[in-house]
Length: 319
Ligand code: NAD
Ligand code: UDP
Image: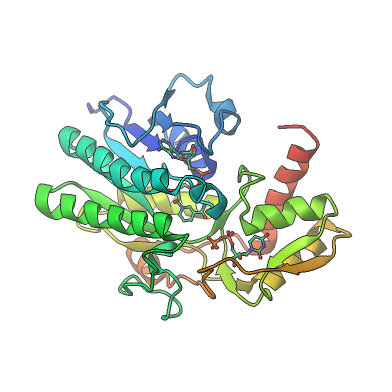
C-alpha cells in the first residue's frame, strides 16, 4: 500500500448480519472493501446500499476453497452463526471454520496481511467459570449437536495461533458474545430476532426451558467499533479477547422487555430446552477495557428499539 492509496480490506461473510455492518463502517473509514460470501445465510439485501460505492466489491466464493487476492487486512467472519443454520449441514460448518481458517491464514501469510478471526463465546461451551475470562479453557461437548460450531471455532483459534507462532502471521482473535441489531436474519431462530418477530406479529413468545438461562447482549454498533480498535492495536496484542456487553439478562427478562417495547399482545409460552444449551453466559471485558479503552455504550432497551424498528419495516415489506 502506498501513502496515497486506500487500505484494501477483505471481509469474509460480508453479506451477513455482522459482516454487512462491518463493510459499511470500513467504507466510511475510507477503505477499499472486498466482500466475500457464498450467501448461505447472508443476502444481497444486507449490502444493497453499498453496491453503488466504487470502493466496494463482492466475490461470491466459499471460503472452504482457496482464494487468491491482494489485500492488506482480512476480517474472517464467514460461518453460519445461529444454531438452526450451523446445524443444517454440520460437516460444512466445521469445514467452513477449519478449511476456511486454513485458506484465509494461507492468504494472509502469502500477502503479509493482518487477519482477524470472529471466534465465539461458544469456545467456553457450557461454562463452569462465571463471568468468562479469556484464560478459561472451556467446558465443551466434543460430540454434541453444537460441536460442529464450537469445536470448529476452537480449531480455528488453534490454527490462528500456530500460524502466528510458526509463520509470524499478524493475528487478532476476538471471542464474540451474543450480538443483536438490524439485519439479523428474521428466521435464524436466535432469541432476539425470534422474540421480536413473534411479538410484532402477536404470536406466542417461545421460551426454551424455564427462561432462567442468561445471556449478555451486545448491540452491533458497539461490537463493530471494537473490531476496528482491535485491528488497529499493536501487533503483539493478538487476543484471544472477549467482545461483548457484560449486561446479563435472563431469557425471561428479555421476553418481558420485548413484549413491553413492542406493546405486543403476545403470551409467553415455554418449550423444551435444546440439548447443550449453556445455562449462563457473560463476558469479562477487562482486557478490552484496559488494552483498548473500549466499553459498550448502547443499553439493551435502546438497541432493542432500533432492532424492533428494523423488523417492523421488514414485516411491512420496506426492506
Ligand atoms: P451470519 O450468518 O449473518 O453471517 C455469516 C456470513 O457468512 C453469511 O453471510 C454467510 O452467507 C457467510 N458464509 C457462511 N459460510 C460461508 C462459506 N463457507 N464461505 C463464504 N461465506 C460463508 O452471522 P453473523 O451473526 O453475522 O456472524 C458472523 C461471524 O461472527 C460468524 O463467524 C459467527 O460465528 C461470529 N459470531 C457471531 C455472533 C453473533 O451473536 N452474531 C456471536 C459469536 C460469533
Ligand atoms: N431461546 C429461547 N427462545 C427462542 C430462541 C432462543 O428461549 O425462541 C433461548 C435459547 O434456548 C438460549 C438463548 O435463548 O438459551 C439464546 O439463544 P440463541 O440461539 O440466540 O443463542 P445461543 O444459544 O447461541 O447463545
